[in-house]
Amino acid sequence: MTFAEPDGPLDPRGIPQEFVDTPGLYVHIPFCSRLCPFCPYNKVLFHPRAASDYMSRLRREISWYGNLGPFTSLYVGGGTPTLAWKDLEFLSDLPVAGERAIEVLPSHMTPTMAQRLDGIGFDSVSLGVQSFHDSVLRHLQRPNTAAQNLRAVPVARETFACVDVDLIFDVAYDDPSILLGDLATAFSMGVDQVSTYPLMRFGYTPFGKAHHDRRAEHRLLAQAADLAEGYGYRRSSVWTFLRRDGQVYSSITRPYYLGLGAGAASFTGSSFLVNHFGLPQYEAAVDADHPPVALRAQLPPAAAAAYRIFWQAYTGAVTPGGDKLMSHLVARSAVATALALGWAQGDQQRGVELTRAGYDHFHDAERWVTYHLIEPLWEQMMAEHNRGRCPTHQGPAGQVTGTRSRWRSQAGSMDSGVTTSSSTATSP
Ligand SMILES: C[S@@+](CC[C@H](N)C(=O)[O-])C[C@H]1O[C@@H](n2cnc3c(N)ncnc32)[C@H](O)[C@@H]1O
Ligand code: SF4
Image (tube, rainbow, N blue to C red):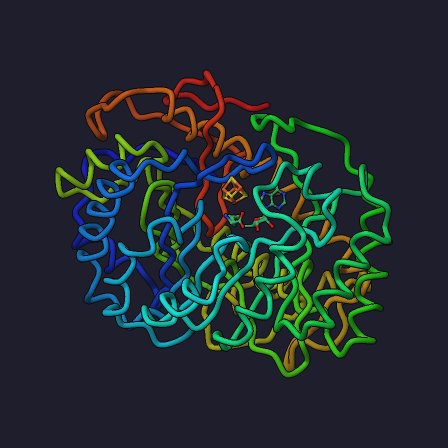
């Protein structure tokens, strides 16, 4: 896969035509009042003026795509979107067929904020709890405490149809009982979904790189799956557990998505588009009436099918459907191989589910993708934060080539001191 700068400024009217089917909408708000040292996403310190300038450009960018809706879903992520809650009111007018979800820092989940978000039309929230143990929160240098996390969950449950709790586990640091205890706490509070992310260590964050003990991670996730069963939850993806009667809440399993905002990415079915990460670059492009796309990669049908099956498998189940990428030979061969290796059970016609061994292999694959494809791309893109305002889409076409570049549907970019050039790929 090759990412390159677009040949010239893009026309907003061209992008909707590229989608093979209606996308979900992802909106990125890159402001935080404190920057967590482990966080690889696109974020900058909150400043009211900067946020208001950014939000006016975001409204303009969104206005170009009204005709593409109704979007299958809306997901507002960050950063800390609730820092700009007043500027999110315009989202209530967007045509959205499915869920309207937003990421919320637990210390922001007060009854007043819950009412505001409900008033804007959000029906799903993802709480960045990370742990109910203060020792873990201190290790992660989180802005929220265990007591705030415990208070946030019932407030969210009272207002929203779907509540997800994000947990992070770090086998290099935690005793296994910590994650299992955190899961038990979340399950006993009846949340709809719990996401358990292994701490990913991106080289450009202050946490830096570290070795993963993959077998310890497999063992812990298997214990988590057993615990979940006992509480009436089922594993609904490699890293999530869903209440048996709960609604699926996910930002990364939409087949096609339109990402708006600095650092957001889109997948049209045949190409990836990555927006500028730097706010000045993003804003300059929007001011010039051009989609703020910094890099794009065209995917041949086989690669698009491989991408599609990868994210479908992330959910732990692959069901045959009308989607032409899913019926591509590459997708069918991947399913046949997983069945032959014992990584999946079921059959091609009715659908397959990952076995425990399949989940372990997928866990390793997801980590590989994160470090080999996402991290180099984000590292390159985040270098935009170190440059000033610059003309958009000018200069020689930069490239990121090979298998070492990709992104996920959530946006990303960083704030730390990276010195890579914008026009050449670098690998850690
Ligand atoms: C985009 S973040 C932001 C959510 C929100 N700002 C907060 O901190 O509560 C969404 C989730 O990504 C996860 N996350 C962030 N950095 C991570 C890392 N280095 N490894 C694994 N998961 C991470 C966290 O669980 C977090 O809740
Ligand atoms: S984890 Fe959340 S609060 Fe912390 S820096 Fe990342 S986006 Fe901001």
